[in-house]
Image (cartoon, rainbow, N blue to C red; front, side):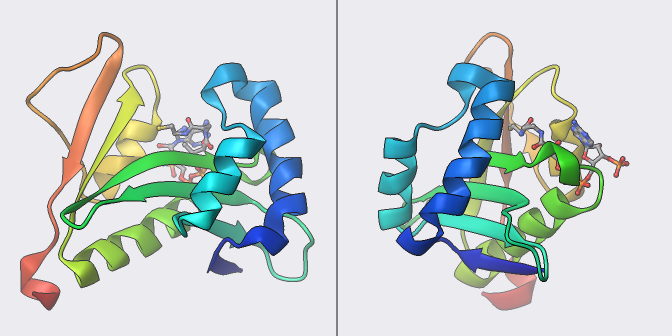
Length: 146
Ligand SMILES: CC(C)(COP(=O)(O)OP(=O)(O)OC[C@H]1O[C@@H](n2cnc3c(N)ncnc32)[C@H](O)[C@@H]1OP(=O)(O)O)[C@@H](O)C(=O)NCCC(=O)NCCS
């Protein structure tokens, strides 16, 4: 398994994953065009299984100098429940602690992914912004690196 920062050479494999994603989530997935923009901004991370020509998981973040927004986390349905999402989040939290950055995300309130996020230090924010969604935040672990 490897977690790599995506570049344009991954686009064909990403496109296959985007098709699966769109079939499952419709408008909640990412368009090919938006994905290219994210990749050019160097904010897309891929989970690639060893010796396989497929992308098992993808994580898209938006990075400002003060905090990071976890915009998308998607694992190919055939690879769910095997720790792919956890490995992507583990790499994210390492990066956050290293850069001393706080992080934010938004998740549908009926999505069990919120329990996964809690395992990685995200807690529910006090502010409630959008009906049907939960805002979560994670503070970097200052004692580790800062
Ligand atoms: C949420 C998601 C990223 C988890 O990825 P994953 O690789 O299956 O996660 P892991 O194997 O590391 O961890 C599984 C845990 O995730 C949680 N989970 C949330 N949704 C899940 C799902 N549909 N299938 C399996 N586990 C899910 C469970 O709490 C599970 O806990 P367990 O280990 O006690 O069983 C993946 O299910 C997915 O891509 N779902 C569709 C897109 C989505 O909802 N993304 C989050 C939007 S904010």
